[in-house]
Amino acid sequence: MEVEIELNPDLNVDALAQAFATHGRLQIPELLKRECAEALLRAFQKNTQWYVAYNEGESAVESPLAEVQRLPEPQRQRFYHAINQRAGTQFQYCFLQYYITENVKRGENPEHPLHPAHAFLNSDAFLQLMREITGEPAIAHADALASVYGPGHFLTDHDDRHATRDRVAAYVLSLTKNWNRNWGGHLVFFDERGNISDGFLPSFNTLNMFKVPQSHAVQSVAPFARSGRSSITGWLHR
Image (cartoon, rainbow, N blue to C red):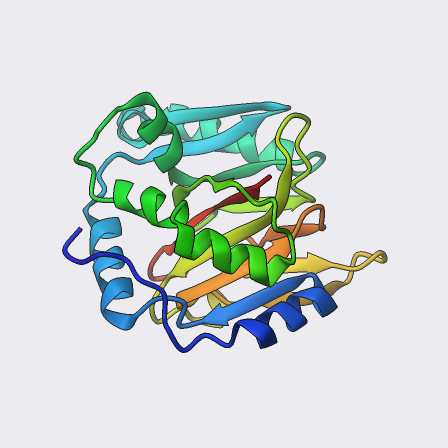
């Protein structure tokens, strides 16, 4: 990257920790130094290796975006129609992603512009901040994926429990500028009656984080949205 990614030194960690303890979720504006956030966004925009991420039941699937775009129109419509049909009755998601951490672990694309984000999210500075905010000193590492939610993309209600991974919290480092609230794409949280109890607007240089398990979703992005909901997201693990 053009510059080293650094945290905003003016964060009030005690106040953030108190808010997280009270609500189990938190929105942190201006997480990074401004010049670092701008450099990270430029690195994000250089990524050309996007995959359509979706699930078939409990199986996570990635299809290269370029291959999906090359499908004949009727076949591509059937592809997305099947995803939308499943979403009507079960957990389902569909968005674009580049799984930064998995590529780093496999040693693939070592010069990729987004791979320094994995190093930052696993740095002593970031992980210690997360330990202090969550009150969980055992946080050991974070994983990261770049995602874009364009028109029609969504993530239905779930709580982020995982059978084999010990997740403490989930995070979304939002890198979205000039988002119109009417475009959807909010990270929303539900109460026991199914009402939306809280919602976070896509924004720039903002860290949204919440305790796991917790019922949440990403609202469908409207067909008239003029841009994509861009973020780096993942989980904090013991």
